[in-house]
Length: 280
Image (cartoon, rainbow, N blue to C red; front, top):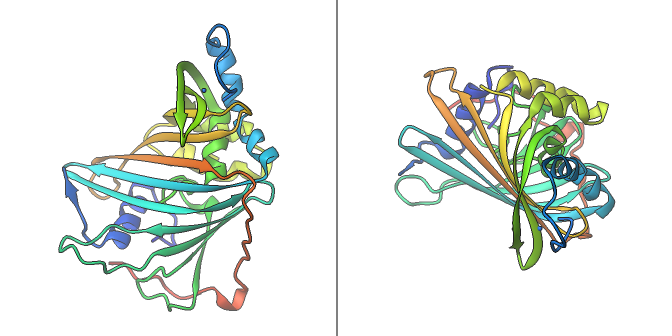
């Protein structure tokens, strides 16, 4: 799913989805609560978005659903995930569901991903990895900082990226999962986010700022009346290093069930695969 060697984000993500999907192709909302009074100014909107990650830490934990869509040429692939995340411990668990192959049969087992500060662990990785072993990837070595390579954006990283919001506008009131929210649209700068996040999180964002075709990431974000992020959709763009084609990735993260119990135990060293990851 993820290359062990460093590389451009285009090659990494295309390799990721190629390994996951094995040729599958398909051609082809107010935070801060109910709106009272005047719509917030652009500066107020930016400040509210930049505080969203802190609001999640105060909330403690949540359930999450994710989707990752990649489109290049006439090919579109979507990967879904579901799990839980502890924002204080910065630990999460996702079950990543892969699309069916072109014949319509289910050949891929769901991949279990454990998210932790600086590392991504994957089980049922396939491609030569024993079924009882985990693959560990240092996220600071990935040229996208694991914003897209894992097939799902880390929920906390998705919120942290909003710390790099350069501009935003209030769109209006909406609902997400029956909850009133404030809908914002804007553009985040990955390089700015790298300067704004805590020191422990800076390296992955710095790598991402260099790895993508552009450091600017358009987004739609939805905040509830406690300033918590309920939904965010980021649109990334990079150049496939192998074919020099532009690849568009849309990552959507949905957060709900705040306060949900989270029990994430990282694998022991003996359970981590240390051999060569086969390519497909």
